[in-house]
Image (cartoon, rainbow, N blue to C red; front, side, top):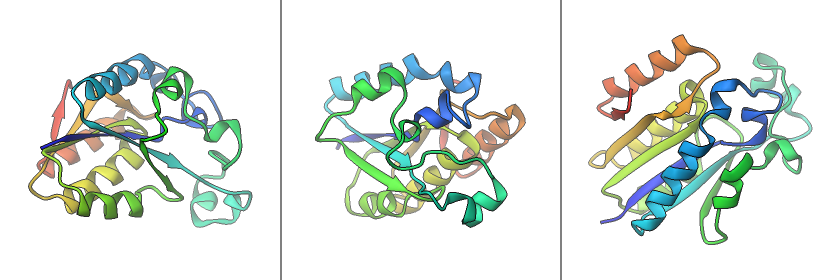
Length: 175
């Protein structure tokens, strides 16, 4: 049975743009390495894209986080750096306008994997949300989060998210 790697929101605005932070920049080569490892094993790699529109600041999220980011059609919406070179036309991509991806959840409900690993940003928001959806969609699969391939702008929230995921019977590696 195949394994699945989910690269969560490693987009310009979360790395070097309006919501960028140094810890996200440091993930680039680790994420590239992980993608190459999965591809060499013949496993699946999928990507999520945080996606907002011109009315972002009028949305609930925009009122709580009034920083326009990942606006569809902008450079901030695109994958960051050399990670962008890793995406293939055949890869599944999931556009989401909130923290967790409903379409990723639906896909995972219909496609069995031995394990599902999540990497990317932000650990305590979108990585966490999609990890919970993966656990819900596939309760018997091993859900893995690589702590060296995810980060947050807030170290306390990053650690708390990793602890919470372990509490949900996910395997957090490389802590």
